[in-house]
Amino acid sequence: MKAKVYVTLKSGVLDPQGKAIQHSVELLGYAGIADVRQGKYFEIALDGSLDEARAREIAERMGRDVLSNPVIEDYRVEVEG
Amino acid sequence: MKFGVIVFPGSNCDHDAYHVISKHVGQPVDFIWHRDTDLSEYDAVIIPGGFSYGDYLRVGALARFSPVMASVKEFAAQGRLVLGICNGFQILCEAGLLPGALIRNRDLHFICQHVSVRVETTETPFTTGLRAGEVLSLPIAHAEGNYVCDDATHAELVSEDRIIFRYCDTGGELTEEANVNGSRDSIAGICSRERNVLGMMPHPERACEDLLGSSDGSGLFRSLASTLADAAR
Image (cartoon, rainbow over all chains, first blue to last red; front, side, top):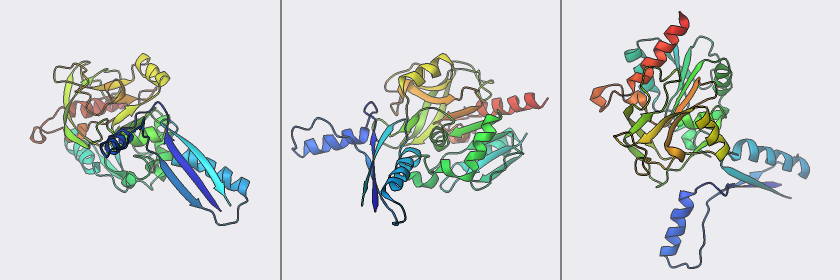
């Protein structure tokens, strides 16, 4: 089983890295890009001793307590069997 | 009075802080390894600059889980003095001892230069010997010093007089250009509600000798020492 945690900057927080990426892809000629936001993605492999509900609970807690900073970031968890 | 300098894997201003306390403040100081948890013999601890845990995950994020940080929280709750400089400020924010967060500089660069910093208040144990409005020349060296917080936190910092340092020009004016990393409201340093925890991005410990380009940081350490001396009386 695998837990996937996506961490993204909250909407009001400036993302200078996303801006730089947007600028670069626009220089390459990609048109129609309104905004780029950079985030983080974590894959957590689980050893099979946990059921899905418990795995989700643990991943949620890790997302909240470790993987994201609630001042600037949001997180989202997916668990796949 | 006794000082402690906390050392994480990746701290690199620990020796600067130790040097300033031992040579300039002239007081006993120990290095405290991040796995140690007994802070009972110290009156003040310094969380120095550097790249604790390689800045992995987020700056300051992993240091917060070191055993010593639970002791630092307790130490701060007892009203004893905690000074976080640069990465130390980032760690204090991650640990929830100070509000807000430090994100990538506005222009993405690592900035390493002397900047002008205005003293906003003398109402802290760290700034009693300075003058409000005084402009200090202090070095900064960071890529993530861009202070952010929500509107409610900012309003609280302002109304409680907890913004201690702001980036300014040499004349003490707050300008967009002088706010080198893009921090909200030009914030360079803030303190806790109880005023005994100070976090700042500029490095006063690297500015205590004219040979190093500025000795403007020494007033902060003198203030700290005289606060502790007064308390011991």
